[in-house]
Image (tube, rainbow, N blue to C red):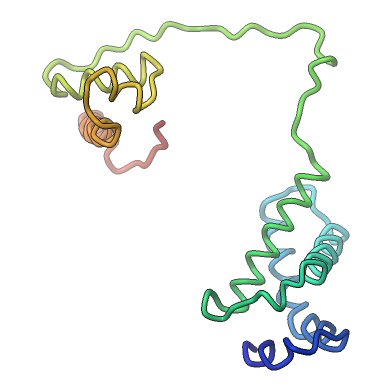
Length: 181
């Protein structure tokens, strides 16, 4: 497939583009349909066709065929990335996620609950305790904590990671992955 593109790059004719899409349209359609139907509940076959048309338009309009390099990725990977990004753009365009502030009658107040949580004594070192407290209870970023403690932000992130690992082991959550900011 790569040699096919390289041989025909010089002649940027309608025949080359047509044969390119004839050879790859089934792959593109499969990628788009699998992505849309697994990620978006309201997707339909019409959406798949629309996205495929947008992909073709984008590839032709931006002359992506001539920009493809087999040294960077395989043709299928290249098409997959283009197909997926156009699919995401399309779904964001037809399903915007926003709330109009003017439509809200009353803005609900956010309740700030005070969480009373004490770390077990002696579990964390003094430095780990400082870092965890400043990041999670002081709402500071690693850079801000680093400035206050006179260390690098990389060291702060390392200390935070070690402290989280100790806490996971202590609370028997070491085998469960959680996203922690």
